Each structure stands twice: as C-alpha cells, then as structure tokens.
Amino acid sequence: DAGVTQSPTHLIKTRGQQVTLRCSPKSGHDTVSWYQQALGQGPQFIFQYYEEEERQRGNFPDRFSGHQFPNYSSELNVNALLLGDSALYLCASSLNYRTGDNNEKLFFGSGTQLSVL
Amino acid sequence: RKEVEQDPGPFNVPEGATVAFNCTYSNSASQSFFWYRQDCRKEPKLLMSVYSSGNEDGRFTAQLNRASQYISLLIRDSKLSDSATYLCVVNVRGGAGTALIFGKGTTLSVSS
View (tube, rainbow over the protein chains, first blue to last red):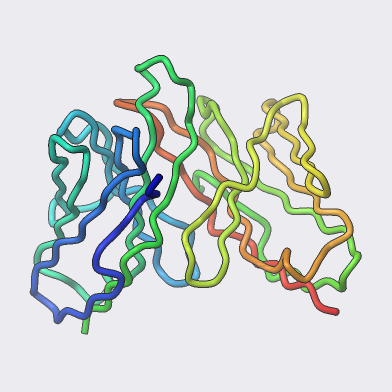
C-alpha cells in the first residue's frame, strides 16, 4: 500500500520562473492538501482539493494554484517565483469526512524542497 | 495573535527527564486537536490526537482544556529517540474536510 508520494524531491529555480510540484495520495484517499514549510516554521496551509475542485484556501496569493485529477493526484503550481517561496512543500492526503469515515488524520508525503535563487 | 502558539524552544533535557509542552489556540470553533512529530528534514507524522478527557500513549500524555483553549503534551522518561520538533495542531473544518493549522513547533533535544 503506497503512501503519499511527491515529486520531485528537490528543485532549484530562479526568480520569476514557474514551478509545478506533483503529489499522489495514499491509496483510498480522495482529498489532497498542500502545505508550505519555511525553515524554522510550522507547515502553513495553502489549499485543499476534493472532487477536482479547490475547497479551502489559506492565506496565499493567486500565484499559487493547483489542480486535482480524476485519479485524485494533484499538482501545485507557483508562478513568478520569489526568493521567499523557498521552502519545503508538503502534500497530505485524507479521506473526505462527508463519506462517513470520520478519519481526520492526514498522511504527509516526504515533500519537495524548493530553492529559489 | 497567531492561531496556534507554542512554547518557544529549544528544550534540552537529559535522558529520563519529564518534559511538558504547552500550546494555545485562538479559534474557539476548532474541533480536533493533535500533536505531530517532525524529525529534521522529514515530513510531520501524527504522534497522537488530543481529547478533552485526556489520553495517554505509553510515555506520552496529552490534555485539552477547551475553556482555556489550551493543549499540552507530557513526555515521561525521555529517550534519545524523542529528539525532534513537536508541532501542536488544530483542525479547522470546512469545505471538503480537514485543514490543519500548525504551530511553529518546539524542538526537543534529549542528551545522554
């Protein structure tokens, strides 16, 4: 049973570029959330996808966008990269509580370390 | 005020010590509470959920006081392997499911 997988593991970009990060949720999970973790900080919620739609969003600018595919996998896109976007980007999957399963536990992938130079 | 605030760290303790972490949250509508553990450069992993009645898992005890909006984690008989960052987490329910709000984390270093 594969857990949450993310790719790539590391990425180096320059300011102004665009980046796409990918995530495959844990088998059986249908909801994907993305978090940004800067050095020395806790993870910050970016947004959450379910049924291919963005359902919740944290306090992040429109430069951050995402997508969820029919197979529940997801992408995070960041445009016009800034130095401050350098962080560990974590994907987490869960099962939608509306399905009747009250499992609120998130399973995290090992993250993508993005460095913006 | 931050949504989730934790004790500033780091905590440096010898093996066998008892250490307590405290956390406060600002959103009274928060419904679920957790402690996550994060090792250096790794993803966060759920340590335990926190219930109003208090719950214990081996050497770890978690407590929740909804009236005070306060969460605690007690670690007894600290082991070297307990060295990590401990993240206080509250659940904000909305939309499709769970959005977790994390504290900044408190780093624990257990030495021999």
